[in-house]
Every structure is written in C-alpha cells, then in structure tokens.
Image (cartoon, rainbow, N blue to C red; front, side, top):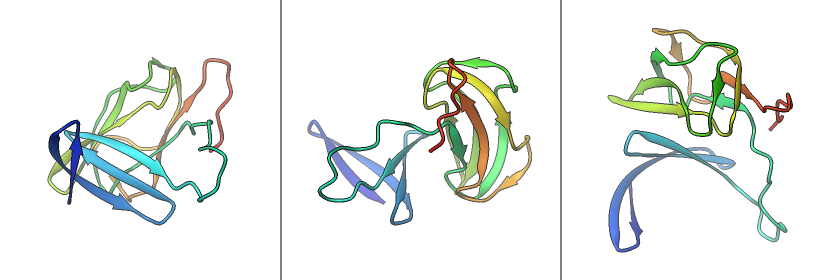
Length: 126
C-alpha cells in the first residue's frame, strides 16, 4: 500500500504489477502505468485496446456486449479480487470488438479480458 499526496490531500492506493507495467487501485478504479526508459523522448502515444485483468479474481459483472459502442472510461466489467471490486474501463472511445470472459469466470492477473476497437477500425496493437 502507498500513500499519495495529491494537492495536499493524502490518499491510500494499492500498487501491483511487474517491472514494465504497474496497476494502481484507487477508489474502485484501476489505473495502468507503463515504464518509460530514462532518456526516452516521450511516452508512447498509442494506447492499446487490449484490456487485461488487473489481478487474479472473478468476473462478477460484464456490462457490455460485443459490438457495443463505448466512450472513453466506460465500465466494461467488474472483477472481484482481494475482497474489492475493480472496474475495467475502456481506454478510448470505440466499440467492443471482443469479450474473452463471461460472468462468474476466474481470471488471472494480466489475462486478456476484452478488446476495444477504435472508431476508425484500428485495433491499436499495444
């Protein structure tokens, strides 16, 4: 557990992940951070449409169907892990191209659970 100081407000967060990518859990949401090598000109601009389970857990609710149009940050599903509900959200506006899991299914941390396709049809490989 970490404590962040955001504009003078202290908040507790849980951090999980590996050397390349970290998941930060805060207020029921999951945020992903990708490591950028020192000296890199800038962080990658392209965001992947491949959504992964933040932790090993159980899919408690799938909130969309394949083909549904979604906005950025639309909830796609809820995964219960560590006695908490973690919301998996769309990283950008698009449509649900694939759902790889169903309600009640157990998933491993890092497992692909869905894919969002950009409005232009580009699946944004990440």
